[in-house]
Length: 309
Ligand SMILES: [Mn+2]
Image 1 (cartoon, rainbow, N blue to C red):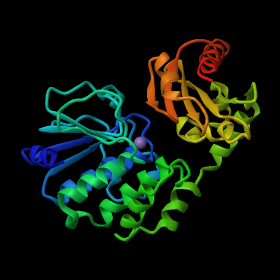
Image 2: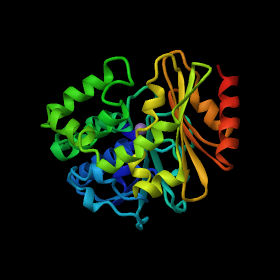
Image 3: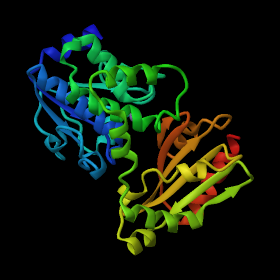
Image 4: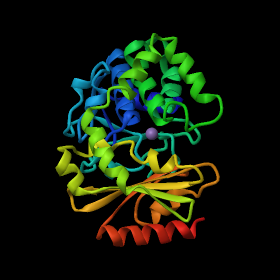
């Protein structure tokens, strides 16, 4: 960490970049770092190709995030396994990566990849506490907490003490955990439920252990919704009793199916399944893109999953 601090300190302009279709961890990682770097006197840019989802626009500084890649001295890639996931051309400048997964590309010997941390914001919190605790104020703590809360699924997806230790620290910086939970989980637009009611009709269990949900193109058309409205739908097949592995397959306007895979205790490593289709992720959560008809994709996915049971 010391080397990473010294390395970053060599530069003046710093861009913090995360993945397309940003989740709470992506947004929180970018904003937590940017707000901290600004406090330290750097010229910092937050970059998200798809912008900040509506639901996270309560976090201080969200409106500073840009959807193009600005000229910068160094690029910090957060919560993403490789640069391609940012949706931008790779710049010809130093890149350093912070993540809570060891898999993926490495860009520098200063990368900070910590396996077992509950969120990328948890890795960043450790790093910022090492760097300068006095610069971690509310504006830094709030986005880091949002990443922690969302990536752990409201503290459901992780065992152990680390998430709670981080939460105690961040709440100690003034984060109101009840207010944030309401912002994140209880401000669902009604369109999401309209989309969900259609998608739930496709909920299917295979061999008692595998379940899936499909979000078809016409569901979006019928309800006037988009991919932002179906973010957490994979929770429904996953939560069926007896099921240990689940996926959501969703039509993407770019012409393929976007597949999100999840595993429960006793379930298979879904990262290995996603990798078969050119995707990636980690043990309990992974994703990939597959071209083909709904039936074709269902068939190849289910037969691949069965090999891992
Ligand atoms: Mn994450």
